[in-house]
Image 1: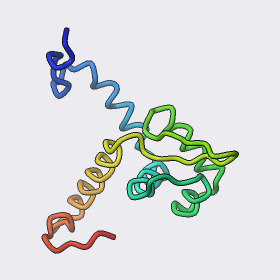
Image 2 (image 1 turned 180 degrees about the vertical axis):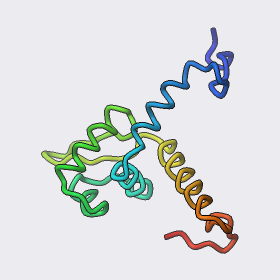
Image 3 (image 1 turned 120 degrees about the vertical axis):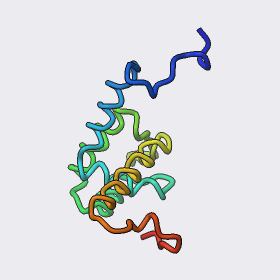
Length: 121
């Protein structure tokens, strides 16, 4: 069967539903969400740089990065003894952005992302 003729992944009976749930479970952690937000605008960052950006210890961030790496959300590049991380693709970043947009809706009123003149933080 050709790849472009495979069943759509958006159906309730899709074989991708369980995998999607695993992705959501992987993102159900504030530190991991912060790491993804930190990486979305960076080419790549070291563990120490990420730890500083997310306000956690390098050891804690390293553990979260290991899980994100196993889930193929981040990839690494080694330079000597230093390891640099970047997002594998834009999908996790988009999921996090959409979750934040949904969170803004839960506060009531008109969310910032609906304002034409919004300023990104």
